[in-house]
Image 1 (cartoon, rainbow, N blue to C red):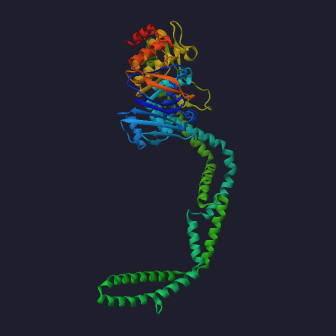
Image 2: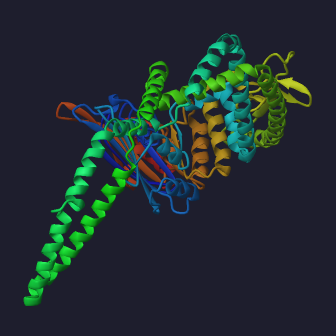
Image 3: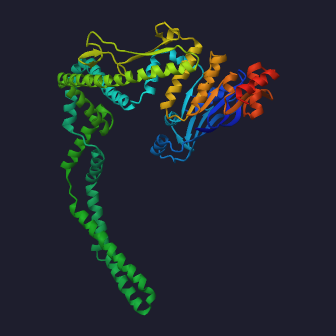
Length: 567
């Protein structure tokens, strides 16, 4: 559940901090006061697309922060731990939108991506925005509602995995067929380029080694001369440094016999002699190995020239040459074995079409079972919402195709159209009057009926739903009177299972609130600001009375408000 929502410099909101409670949280206020701005801010927090237009004039950025109680929420815990974010009983989600265009997201003060904040938000909140009930009029959304209700996520993921493999394979086959002619045209060119590169066989990193080796060979005479001179001065000449140091050491030893203060110098002199000996030995060995090899010079220069030529033709570096060789090698291999690769892909695709068909049929059977259950439960829920004779049907159809030239999956030996959701075409049908056959929901339902059907769906989905918070922005659109009372009771029942936040303009719904908040708009200097405050008992009565009678509260409206609220 959400404990608090803080919004700063967002649209008309300068700064509000709302603390929500368990059960049914109702938000009311005049049209244009900013009720839906709060819901929009919540949507932003949960990952909706952002625009710098939401930043309040005069501010540099908008901030929306929500504190959620996630104690015991294993899915949220798993996501946080996966991203190395500390899991606490309270989760702080924050989003910042700057005029500079930056969009920053945080979970427990740790910077995260927008996708990560969406992933967590999807486990915490179901936000039903204003007019979203109209999505029911789009047939393509019906399968989503059905799948939300069903307990077959593993079957959906299994199908999608096979579907992904099949899509990848069919795409590869299509690309392969499209490039067949160009591959054949380039086969001879690739063959020549491969032979040219392979005749040199460049090795990663060899160029630097060759240049170093060339430098040594080109200076071999100088190396021979210098090493001989150094060795002679260090060790071999009559007055070599080594001999001089030996004499000095003898004299220091004599000094040590007289004064022990020279002991350390004597030891250091021994170390210096050992070091000189090592240096001399190294130089002598190095000098003995120097060979004047003009043939090697020519070989290295020729090799570097070959590498330089390849670099000019194929990318400017050895790594680019090798990458190019790998790519054209694959293309040449493909061109040489084009028919075999086509046949191999076709065989794999044939197998996947059958596997995908099997998974789609299994998923379809689950949907049909769920459809029968949801039909009855929606009808029962609609009865409680004032549509007593509703007949709700979930129609699941499939489209067979005549020719296997089109993309398809195979089910029981027959080809069918398919999408990322399976081969089911799901559509809701409804009849709200006795004796009438169900017709497509998109063509027969009125605005008020659509709102109630959406609420009915949300009510039954909530029984299976693990989301702790449901938000409704004017779910009561198009209803009034007795029906409004039933909608309110349905929300109240739903609030026994989930924390509910609902914006409403109907007193029948507002009167059932466990916690009531009023949004108002006022002038501050030359600016308009929206604010929100939680109402106490007297404030709630007055607010509900205002919804009954308008701005002027009468004794009759106060009495009516108390009756609606059970006071």
